[in-house]
Amino acid sequence: MTPPTPYRAEDFTVILPVTDYVARFRDAERFAACCRACPNYGRSWGCPPFAKDPAETFADYRTALLVATKIIPETSDLPLQEAGRLIRPERIRLERQLLELERRTGGRAFSYVGSCLYCPEGSCTRPEGLPCRHPERVRPSLEACGFDIGRTTEELFGIPLLWGTDGKLPAYLTLVCALFHNGESPVWKL
Ligand code: SF4
Image 1 (cartoon, protein in one colour):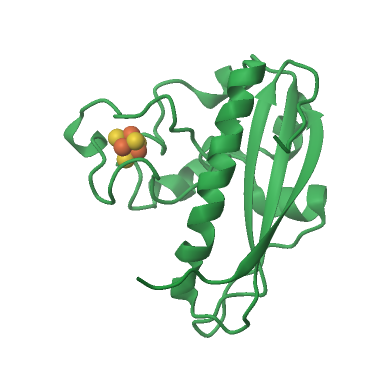
Image 2 (image 1 turned 180 degrees about the vertical axis):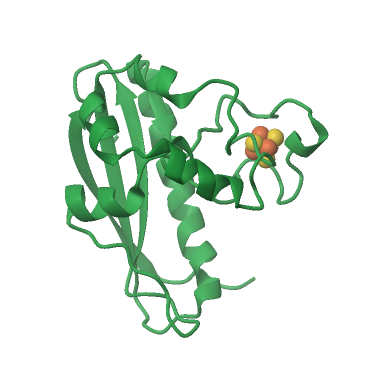
């Protein structure tokens, strides 16, 4: 078995009213067009099109807790193919934490684009028109709900999104997730 790629991860949080986040950072039409061009469109229950307009869900909550996670490899010049091995353990940690906070606050979590963590790759039930096997765990990403993640990281966290060049990973990767809720501001670290 290949040993894990060494890295460190840092979480940063920002809290703002849901209405502000929607007004300043959502461009539903622009990002819906991006989603329609993606091969995953309509092929996973975590991806659009959604049964319910996400805007109806936003209206149920007052406060947005946004979490940006910087994943910093300890080795430079790693090949781009290493991205998945760096991101997966962080997604597992973050999605578990989001669902626990959702349970505690009655809020709604928004997780990540990419392949779903909860079934083997290529086995999603959606292409067959069957229900999701784990609806209690699957949450859409902020991108899939129309939010601009590049502007979110840059303007709210001061973290520019970096992209790989020449087949190599950038100096760090960035994930963004969120919890919309009505409770007292939840502490991110459990
Ligand atoms: S849990 Fe399984 S069925 Fe549900 S969205 Fe993920 S891959 Fe599809």
